[in-house]
Length: 356
Image 1 (cartoon, one colour):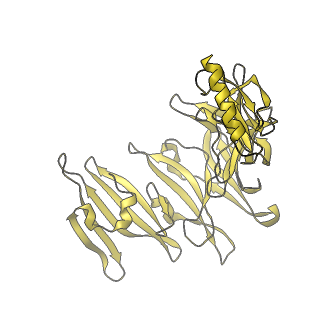
Image 2: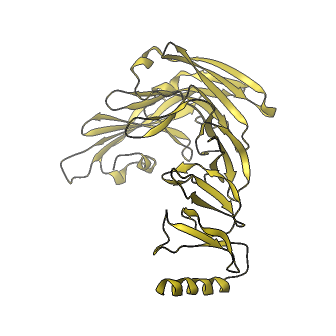
Image 3: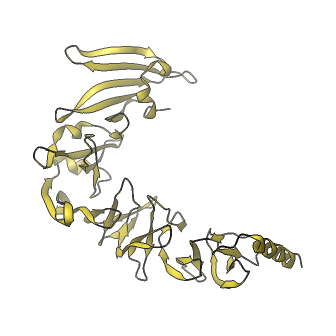
């Protein structure tokens, strides 16, 4: 009887809602939570999605689109519209539907191929990839080959052939591994320009010490590291040593030549962090168990130049760390700005990267 009264009250409230095309979820279970059977009613209280056809998946009110689980074993996530129509399957992320990133989220077809749709349920990039990442900074990594790998701690997709796509699904670059047996030797990188035409091809060779790298994946990205408004090419070189220091190779856009050119100076930057606001690249590394080093690099006259250094030294328990800050001054060399000072004395530009 109590359950009936609750549903009746919900329906009465529903009738008072402004007239609009939307669906609201109801369940006969005690709580509306992920995995319970649901039905969806329209603004008149009519059942649009019958009870038990789906299970609840985080969407209690559907104004444009919503997500539901199939009511069966190994259930997929289904996207339905405000008429109850099935649109497509949704890529699972963190045990739920994929997050919207830059206006798009990942969808799947009957065969498990991945594409992208917008927040209104419009398919923007039709399913065609075996795997694709979410969009970040206007691009997503996608591949039509490879397999999912689970190393016990986390899962990832392994492939020797990738492409970077834009919001329309057009290829920006594609790259493929060059191997000798199982050993990774290089990459064939193809850059696409206007009208999807090939603008440049790069045959890249990994450095000899690549055999000592940890967590080396075939990975290339586009990012403006020289701060000229044009994306540059970063090649993953993996992580090294017990500190797992990350390195990259870099091809910088040369406006005078109209092409990407190899820049050897970027490879020296440890754990690079691109800071668009400061128009620089920060690096960080550990000197010892009690001290860390941070560096600032700027792109000057075609090379990445070290322009500032900060050393952080930890002291006894509960005592705040001390910092020594140096800056390179043309004509004078390295100048010590502060020595063994508290954090409030150093340049605030460092605050985003120092160890807390």
